[in-house]
Image (cartoon, rainbow, N blue to C red; front, top):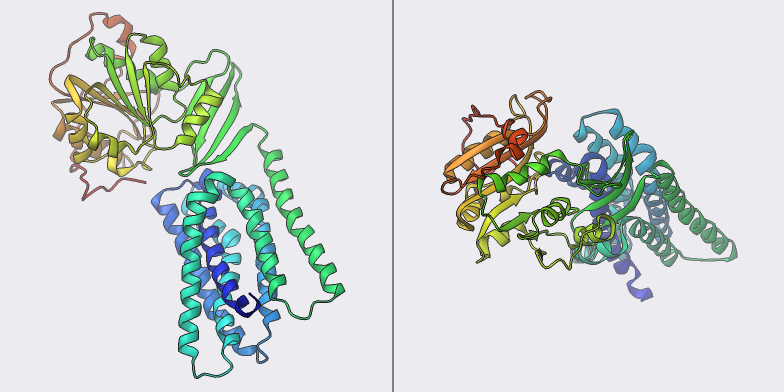
Length: 487
């Protein structure tokens, strides 16, 4: 093991670099979201930091005439301390900066640079310094450089898969940050030569500092957010369950990224989001509807409302994130044993593509503004949804978008796409008090065949009166090949 300590260090440094990149997205997501633009920013900043680290690491390696491995050990120790500052910076820097401006891309650039760029830069210096130390002559520099680069890349691959599939959903980012910090500290000790009693005293002090910084960061977060009941990392998202107090009542909310996905009145158990009541229009337009499918469960607030209100009907819910379903059961009162409820842990588009079951109604509630899974927005997806409907069925979709103006592309693209697929399309404005240029909930309904109207119109009159009967769009349809909207 001692013989290959440089190779082991390079491998682990590559793995830890990719762990930090995945952690960066989770740490930043509650404050700036996790759209393609944010991911692009994070990856770009990390690659920039690594490029500078490779370049400067090579310069420092050339200055290290004695090939002293203790230099590399010191960089790993500094990287361990820099990583330990991440939990502190989340509350005292990232959140503060995000609250000070609406320019989320700028916030992501600054926060990714300050919070994650420094440890990534330091870890990138490992490879060129290792190459220099391994080569006492220039005869085999190519072989050594290729070997070190390969080990670093293999480490990055292992770190990516191990973090994404194992560590993040099972340990959570805070524990991973602590683990990365301690591992970097241990690597610095592993590399250091000529250890004496004074050195061991210092490494104990260093470990106390590293653990103390991580604990301090957790303390700051909990002090700043006493309303957060759960802070959970699933395979797909960072999820917060929070209590929100208003003058009238207390709500329990489920937040993914920057958006509130679901919330309920804790006193009555009723769903809080007004737009969800528009899904009940399925019964007005198709009074004999019995079987429903919902794509996007989140806290399952509408499915629970549906099962309570329509005891003679069934609903299947497709939710890709099993952790969401567990949270809905533990925190929001979902009864998974209800015989009229079907739970399907699967990607929504995949389910539409391959199911053989036909439904009277399909509810889609998987969009977060422009951060929508594009594969559920396209002509091809809606053709599958149309095929999965029974005669006279409806697809009812919640879209978050302005109705008009420069930011209204989402609803206009989707309206054009629905018009190309369904026999009729209707648009409803959920909040009548909002200006059309403001971002808001919009309900889009696509019909297959004719409607089978419920005679009890007065029960739905408030909802029906919010229909926008003159809505038009000149946007092209969205396809799997051309989808200018998405996550």
